[in-house]
Amino acid sequence: MILLLKLLLVPSLIALVTLAGRRWGPAAAGWLSAFPIVSGPILLVIALEQGADFAAAASANTLLAVLAILAFSIAYARCARFGMARAMLAALLAYALAVALLQASTLAPWPAFAAVLLALLLAPRLFGPAPAPATASPRAATGKPGADLPWRMLAGAVLALGVSHAAAGIGPRLAGLFAMFPVMSTVLVGFSHRASGPGFAVALLRGMVNGYFAFAAFCMALSLLLRTQPLGQAFALATVTALAVQLGVKGVLLQRARRPGRADQAS
Image (cartoon, rainbow, N blue to C red):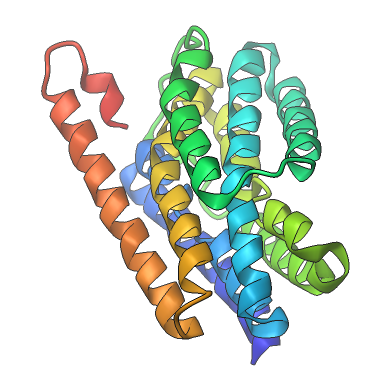
């Protein structure tokens, strides 16, 4: 049962978001991909295999890992004009450095949550000047139809298997941090950059930042609920919390988009 969950759930969720992105464009892909579609199932598998207390600690560290993802995003945005390969290398190096620093941190869940929210508010200002946008269809912005979907699904399955299998050995801190490995960012942004240029890739990353508010809420809620609620109820309530925050952020973005000169922030 757990093996099937590892092999099927994460790849299936990645496929659904990929198809949604091809239907509604890169802004939707960026916004949806920040939802805990990869980390959530990984944390569920960890909870089933290692217990609720272990998963609660891992969830708190997955929350901290949002800071590492923001380091990835900012580094990529800053280097996007140098080409996809160089930008991706710089982003992955920034992510690895951030994880190394976070591993040594001792922030409690609530201060960590506050730090993540502050970083999410500041991150868009650190992206630097946006590269010139390229003209491309929504379908092109997420790669050629069907070309990258198997690779995305494979990456999700490998991550779910690897992190959950290694969880007992590496402990809840590293298990939580690596549950947030930028699978969607790496694949989705890389293909978008190749298909549509650096402008599209950076716009996609900006959309992801908007979605990480819901992700942070999910991790924070889960780290608290797993210590007091049954497993299924804890994940259900954390998911509902994330959905509420996701819709609330979208509502704020839509209101900003209606203001003159602010339409670009609705993505």
